[in-house]
Image (cartoon, rainbow, N blue to C red; front, side, top):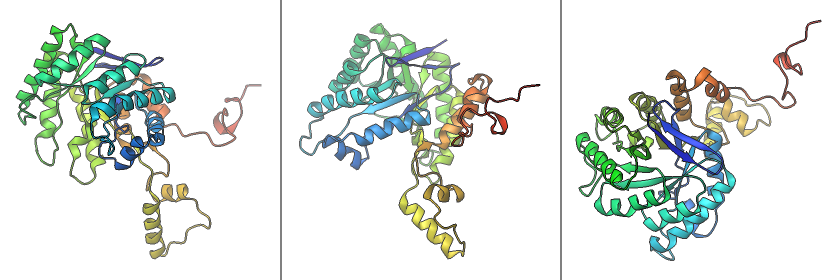
Length: 353
């Protein structure tokens, strides 16, 4: 049975057909995040630290590390990205114990991340483009790490799932020429937005089944791609992930965290509540308020997508005895009641006389 092993210094994550779904946290990535990009160029890693801790707390099994900042002071990523990648990898693995995924389009940054990472990280990524194959596969072999294989090549991204399968097959075969086994290839079959292609969901489910049955490889995807451009994206993602798991997908690169409710959203809701004539208790705190009105939380916490994944793990018998589901849904102990049993009695069950 195909098992892709990813390791930190102290912890192992396994992607496999009979393993719990593997969540690869995507938040440490400055792409599209101007504030984070500016912080990184200024040498401020406070958001990276928060994102690392929040994602692991929410249930991420692996953290993706992307240092793709285009510096205003130096627009050449070949010079700026490798040292930044090393810095972020060293910082993150000093904070959390989960394995890492080294993510870059710059070969020098990939190698810098591999050199800095402890254990056996996942490399993200190689494509079917000839130049990319020749640059990345030797690194995969040299460092003996698994790699994400993205199903596009020199012709771009095809809307034809047969073409995307052929690209994946080509990468697996070329990897074998370097002595890299299929179980160390994690194929991303490329999820198209359902809003632009009505058959996108059906395509990826069929592709995942075929990749599993014919190539024997594990799979991943950028989970939020499926809902791009549509309202209520979380609702679509929540349905997509268990369906992809049912088709055989074994991991996803995604955000496991439900972001905190903003002060602006809280203020707007309070105006609506006041306008409706509802009198709030004096001195009500923000967390109580947002909980009362179903807005979420003022603190980062596991998102609904994580709930869907945990439920699917339970339903597919990849959560033996429901231990992970029960632990994730267990109400936290109230202050002063830690270690108490039913009814708040210390020591649990009452002893018989």
